[in-house]
Length: 370
Image (cartoon, rainbow, N blue to C red; front, side, top):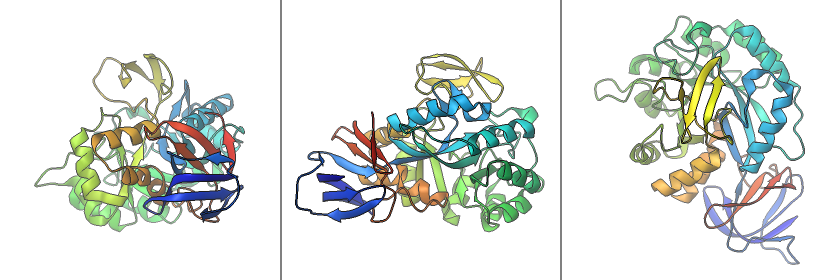
């Protein structure tokens, strides 16, 4: 396949040129001969990488339902996400084990996105900052439980969120960080405790500002510790979880360490109404998901492509937004063959028009319907 005359995202910015690829990218430059696809007036970027998504189209990875995974994979691909981490909720170990086994055995449909691994958002979280996570299913940080779940997934856990202030939290980080990326989140850790967590091997912060103490001038908490420690950070950029000015501030502060995520629930791609999340009822009204009968936000109904468009609308430069939705999240969870356009990398790429409308999706070099 040869796409010509596109503005191609290479490294950290755009360059005008052509790209030739099969299953992997062969070359980027200027080539003779007719194009298979003319990219004139379009941006060509890596496929989006969502490292924090619970579900879509009425389905949730925690359900452990084999029939639900193809629908989610197709939803992601149709919204420009070519790779994702199947993200679980705080549930009892047998329920999570079943979910891990189902994800392990999943083979993506030809018109669906790739499952690049698992994000265990629970159950090793703190009670005070549990948010929409079920309190009765919380578990102290337990390296052995992590190993059992990772084994059930076929070794696919790429990211785990932990409240480092809980009993055993630091030892958990020390033992688990060589296996996968460890993130601090759903945690009431103060600055010093969070710094200790990062010094012990944590490298990431889960949905910054949400599920943690706010940034305070006398106790900067996880937010300040992540900045000082050089950690990568996630933001839910639906315009509901984080004010646009804070998004602009985080972009200026954290730069290339910013990751755009969806934190999407089963309500993504679905109408407003009543749904379920980790055994708890949620209500979606005007696209805003909350625990039913409360004002507690419960994830989002957006895609990462929506987040990309939003942050650009909020004032983040396009190249920085693309990096935050592709290269940065892939690197944050140690995925080296996706998230960039370079010879030898997987040919997962998107063609967007000047309004960031999706024109074409390619996964492993094959064009998918959009």
